[in-house]
Length: 73
Image (cartoon, rainbow, N blue to C red; front, side, top):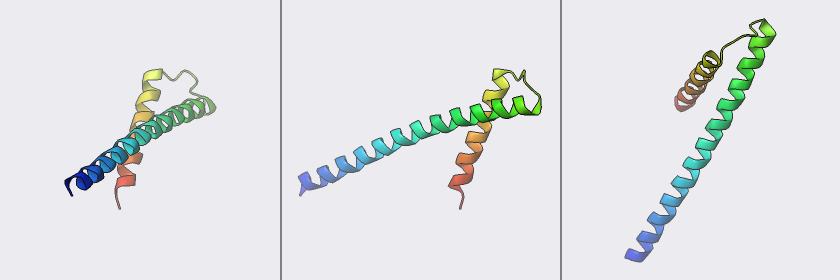
């Protein structure tokens, strides 16, 4: 009985770890895509000399806002 519970706990922990790693990777990919879109759209609008700091800040705000908005129901 104890061995069965330990196996269930191990399986649950492994699923949590795997899903956390996948979500972190997807978050980094989403951030990179957002950064690319921000730099591209700034160039199209006419702000070709956007500093990297401002672009990263904009992408971080967009990523955080989308994560917060997706958590709300």
